[in-house]
Image (cartoon, rainbow, N blue to C red; front, side, top):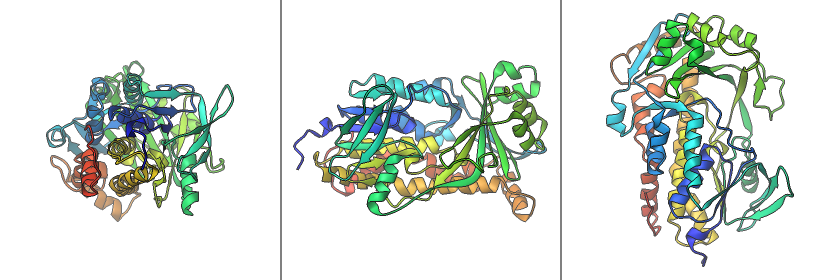
Amino acid sequence: MGSLDVKDLQICIIGAGMGGLTTALALAKEGFRNIRVYEAASDLGFVGAGIQLAPNMARVLDRLGVWDEVARNATVLGDISIKDGHTDRELGNLKLDYVQTQYGYPHMVGHRSELAKALFGGCKKEKAIQFFFSTAVDQINISSEKPSFMAVPRQGQPKKIQTDILLAADGIKSKARVAILEKVGAKAEVEDTGQACYRIMIKREDLAYDPELIELIDGDRATRWVGEQKMVIGYPVSDKTIFNVSTAQPDLNFAAAPSATYTTRGSKSTMLSVYSDFCPNIQKLLKLVPEGEVCEWKLRVHQPLPTWFYRSTALVGDACHPTLPHLAQGAAQAIEDAAVLSVVLSRLIDSSPRAIERAFEVYEKVRKSRAEILVNLAAITGTQLRLGEGAAREERNKMLASLKGKKGESPDKWTDENTQKMTYGHDCMQAANEELNKTHQIGSSSF
């Protein structure tokens, strides 16, 4: 049995994205005193696109004391409009006035950098958390009871780090995932989805000349414009000073790129050509993107993993369940991972490697199937919203039309009543505590 006080366990986190930051903060809030975060970038940068702030995410962030800051400049969505991308004709509309009452928090949209700032600010208030920026992680070894890795600073000598617990929030290119799968004799190669996306932030002053575009940024609405094999979503962020636009279209520019390439400098003329058959408002928005600032992301996933952990090492976020953006749950699911990890580790029976492994078993039981269901629903939504002409699209449009004025079944799972209940109504920390109670783990979570 481990003799070390559980809260003195050394915990190393790889990656300072949403999953890594939330994991560090949640563990510190649970009283862990030795948390180290390793990030290859020199700083967080505080850049990025818009982000969906769904009630299941808000519930966790509120408990961690950062929700008020996140929500301050975010937009409470009043409705979601789904339109024909070619004609701008509304196909369906879901009013969201019930969300706050039903789930305890509104559905909001914000800037990714504001979420990162709030989480990082929360972490900096915790003496238990140390950050090591400009430090890559390599040579991950999970063969022994205590995992180890090489911390490789951009300046200075590499150093071997041994830790009690290793939590890898290192994204879809995760080296820890590779190490875990090697140990269990499995593979889960990163897969192309055949899709890519442009992510665009348009300043209010750049569209102020156009009454139709001002109406978009002044509204409390997220709009999807859908067409064959492509779509666009837009909504206001940062106290309505920025209009966020994200697209999804066939992956053409990455066809000959190396498998490690996920982003490329895009061509404005190519982007405009891809959406040349979309409505005038989309044309006007895309034309506002400055030449040289077009960037395209490749959308990649991998098949469900056989496991999310090995011994004292576990995966977080995109390292274990990368998802397409069509359900707006990518960051939320990483944050749920972090929250559940903080609960199961806070209730460790002792500090032994076997106790840590048992905690990870509960983590996987609570999180894995749920995350995989949502990943699948995101893929289904992407397929449904990018249908070409035919009976399937006609049926889809009939279902979308039935949304007007009421909740119900929807081919867009983001607006589907049952999917929202499953997604927004879930309290991941409560679920973790309930599962631990079933397994007779001793101790109690602070949350």
